Structures are given as structure tokens and as C-alpha cells.
Amino acid sequence: MSLNTNRMDAYLAFLGVERNLSPKTIQSYQEDLRHFVAWLDEGGIDLKELTPQKLDEFLTLTASRAEYSPTSVARHFSSLRGFLKYMQNQGEYNFSTESMLERPKLGHYLPEYLTREEVESVFESAANGKNPLRDTALFELMYSAGLRISEALGIKLSQLDLDNEWLTPIGKGNKQRLIPLGSKAKENLRAWIEDGRPLTHPTTDNIILNKNGKPMSRMGAWKIVQQHTAHLTKQVSPHTFRHSFATHCLEAGMDLRVLQELLGHADISTTQIYTHIDKEFIKQEHRQFHPREIQDRTGK
Image (cartoon, rainbow, N blue to C red; front, side, top):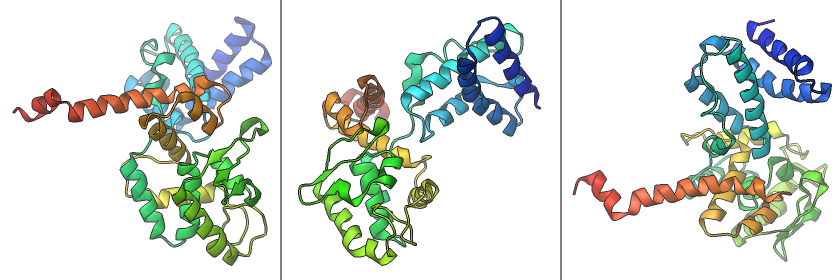
């Protein structure tokens, strides 16, 4: 057992004895903190030697995990802040956590998203890959429809209405929602379903299949994403395309309530996290195109 693990166990004991938290609550803290401790140990980092810069790397990595929603990320940060504050009081951590782990700063750690040009380059790569129809259809579900990877891989033929251009995925809480299909997405999905999918000799009604006609696994989807994003400088996961979908919709002026419905968020506060990205986009556009910003860069 590592020294970092011992520190975590001491903190969990403190929560039980001094804070009188329930075993279930302590288990939640443990689940959040074990990722942090594993990351420290894998990197050979002792907590006393952890710099703010290295901590920032972990926070960014956590926020980019596909299975974490923005609220899950916020909960992880809250657990970590409490742990580090306790360690600071015990003389086991040497930096303040106040400025770097505040909830309002969550937008700083939002997962990476792609520009429109980068998304187009991914579709171009898919179109020229080994399985262009299938891979393009997968990207249409993740980006054009903004589906979670679990939704994209689990969606059935019966949930797709190509004639009326609707998609009806079932999201969290077994809730169904309506998503309109654009003409390009409709064309590419139809091409896969009619021309590519039958060649796999399907054993299931899932739209996205592996080469053996079975439902594609999350690892299979991850490999496809890595293959077609290798030319980019960003770290990309399947969930990156959902983030890109939301960001580009906001950039184009979509109402936040409409975006909430499309993403299947039960609470609009979850959707509002994308406004952080949108504001950064506005800043970038201002710096790129405002005459005085251009003048400052060029000196003319």
C-alpha cells in the first residue's frame, strides 16, 4: 500500500469519526479520490511534491473523461478540494487549493472540443478509411445528432425515421427524446444502413455494428475515433464530438433550452456549462477580428 493511499485512508477515517458522515457518503468520497491516488502512484508522485501545474494536468484529464458529466466533474473536484485541504492542515500538502478548485472555475477544465474545420477533417478521414460508410455513420450520430457514445452504439433501426428525418434515442433515466436529422446525416446513415450494414450479416437491430454484425463495443468506437483524429493535436474521445455539437450549436445562436432538449439534460444547469466554452469562442473571435486587436498584433 502506497503512502498516498495511506493518506487517503486517513482522510476517509477523519470523515467518519470527526465529521460523522455515513458509510455511503464516505464510499462516494473514496470512489472519487481513488482515481487521484492511482494517478499519483502511476506517475511516481508523492503528494508532498505535487505542484499546482501537475494538479492542473490531473483536473484537465478528469474533465475530459467521456463517462463524466459536468456535474460529475464538479463533484470530483469538490472531493479533491476537501482532501487536499485536510492534507494541507496535516502538513502533507504545501499549496493552497482555494484558487484552483473553485466551482466557478469549472469552465477552465471543460473537455476539449473541435472546431468546425477539425470536424470536417475527421469526416474526410472517415470517408477515406477502411470502413467509410460505417465510420461516417458513427460520427454522424456522435456529432450531427450530439449523442452520448452509449446512445450512439445502442440506438436501433426502429429509433431512426429517415423519411421524416427524426432520431429518437433513449438517454439517461430511460428518457426518450426527438432529434432532427440534417440532410447530410440522413444521406450518410442511409448509405450505411442500405449498402454497408447488410454486408456484416447483422445479428442485432443496432445501427452501428462491428465487422461480425454484432453491436460495436465502446473500445471499438474509441479505436475508430483515435484512428480518424490522429492528425489532430488535441486529445479526442467519442464524447468530444458531443461537446463539439453543443458548442457549435451555441456559437450559431441556438437557444439554451432547445440545446437542453437535444442533449437530453434533465437540468438546464448541466447545459449552461457550455456557455463557458461559448464565451471563450467569443473572446477568440474578438481577438482575431477586432481592428485594434489586429493592429496590436501586426504593429500597423
